[in-house]
Each structure stands twice: as C-alpha cells, then as structure tokens.
Length: 413
Image (cartoon, rainbow, N blue to C red; front, side, top):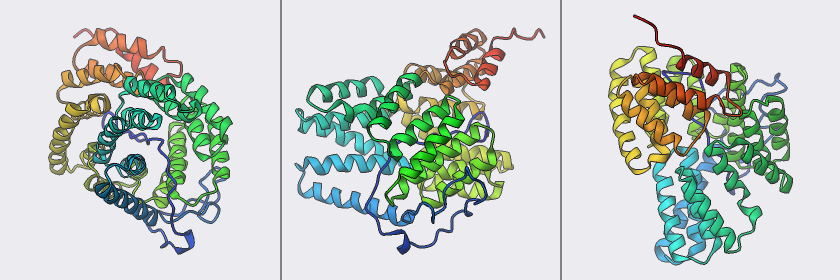
C-alpha cells in the first residue's frame, strides 16, 4: 500500500467463504468502481469472464445466515454444529467487513465450544482458528495438536498450520504446507494462498502463474474468494512497483465486493485525495477497526485537513489503547505504527514493537522495531534490530536499507 506517514498498510486475511447466493444475472449492476482495463493480459478477469454474484447480495446473505444461526442458538443453545458454523461465519464477516467485534465474539464462542465438546477434535480446530486470528500462535498450535490427537485428519489442519507459520514469519515452513494444500486440492483457495506467499518472497512470475491458475479453477459464484484473490494480486503488483496494475486489481476487488474494507482501503490510497478520503471515511465509519481510521488520519494530514485529522487521531489512540489492553499480540504492531506516525510516545511505540516481535519475526515487525528504537533515541537497539532483521531469508531491499541506516554512526553536532 502507498506510504502515508510512516506506514499505512493493511494485509488481507486468508479466510475464504462460499455462500449460497442468487445468480449473477439477478444482481444489480456494480457502480462502486471503474471497470478493469480489458487490454492488460495480466489484469483481472471481467465479470463476464469470471461471473459472480453481486457483492451486496452475497454480503446480505452472509449477514442473514449469521442472524439465522444466532436465533437458532438462542432457542437451542446445545446445537454445537450451529455454533461451529456461526464461529466460521463471524470470523469471515469480521475479516471482510472489518469488524473486530465479530472476531471477539467468534473467539468467545470457540472457548465455549471446547468447554461444551471437550472430546470433539473440530472444537479445538475452531478455537485454533480464532486464536491464530488474534496472533495467539503458540496456543493455536497447541489446539491443532490436540485436534489431531483426538482424531482430526492431519490434512484438515494444514491450512491453519500454514497460516500460523506465515504469521510468525516462517515463510519457508508455511510454503511447504501451502504446497501440500495445493497438491491435495488445487482450488482457488490453495493456489491463491500459495501465490500470495511466494509473492511475499519476491517470486513475482511464479505468483502470477499461481494466481491465474486459481482463477481458472474457480467454479462457484461467491464474490468473496474472487475479491480476496484480486486483492492479493494488487498487493503483488504494488510491491513490484506496478502501481497502475495494482490499482486495477484493487478496483476490481472493490467492485466485486463493495463492503470489502481491505480492498477499499488499498484502493483509496491510490485514488485522487478527495475520492480517497471519502472512500476511507465510509470505511472508518462502518468498521470498529482503528487501522482504517489511522490511514484516513494520514491522508487527511497530507491533504491539509488538520482539524479533522486531530479529532480522528484522538479516537484512534483511545481505540488502540483498548485493543492492546485486550489483545496485545494482535494489536501491538498496529498501535506502534500509529504512535510512530503521530510522532508521539516513541517509548510506547518501542514497547509495542517489542511485544510484537515476541510473537512475529516478520519484515514489518523488524521495520517497526528499528524505526521506533531510532525515534526513541535507542540507536544501539535500532542497530541490533536491523542486524537481526537483515538475516531474514527474504528481507527486502527496503528492510536492508533501513537496517543499514540504523547502524550508521550518529552524526557529530
């Protein structure tokens, strides 16, 4: 994503759902974004080439399914299968629509599921997913081990294990599992996840091939996986420096699923200021995730709207304080970037960066640690972080450059 302040990056999650929806021909015509350019052979497939249900209809169906399961559980609280399904759908809605409350509700229900069905392997698998979403990786891995011990086929747990390893920064370990997923079932999910991962490793051509195969293998009409796939390709091309193609994919993802907050946020940072700000405002107002309002704050400041930026920044600060208190592993990194962008509380930003590094040895974790240490005046610590980060197998040129700067001797006054 385009840099605004120190950082304004949202990485989409990998949850894919396929909801039963009306056929595409029954959907209203999308109006949220311009049609993807048809002359680019590497651009996103059009609606005619890859037909899906309109995103508003699919989202409405998802919400309706959640409400129906909720009502059923109110009448039949012992219905464990309904609870398992509801956990999955809440997690998906939370990811796509940017609702932390959904992720928290799913996590609480997963705890109940294990309590109510302590001998069922799928209860532990469900809890592992919600724990991993909150970056409680060690506990999530323990749940997966328990699920396997209680009879869950190992093949059913590969995707979750790969997600956890990737979240921790073990890209090679994650890739080995992603390849197993693809060999077992080469569908959009498996191919797209492998493509996204090799793209992070800098293997653009390989990623493009996997993404194109993923699109060709899709046989459903749900727009959720398709929008996710387009977003991943936008991220790939933006990392590769092809901003025009990245914007085309972000626009296509937003068109397929207008409520998809991650696609809209990435698109907004590449739009003209007025268009981007309005799009970000609509996201920030609909979501309880402060990351989107944080991006909006940076865009408002860049556009000279300081009063609105200051007011929103105060809200973001309060929200992050609440989230870091409840879910430190999941939100310490985001809170650290926010404090760094605001130029305030560098010591707190450094503390958050260290909390994050304890669970995630990723490139962005090291970037935050270096920049926060430097801002806090801890130059030796910044250099140590830089030396460690530069050892990552797939460290980017940007990370190596920041590391080199962090280890330069301080200028003599």
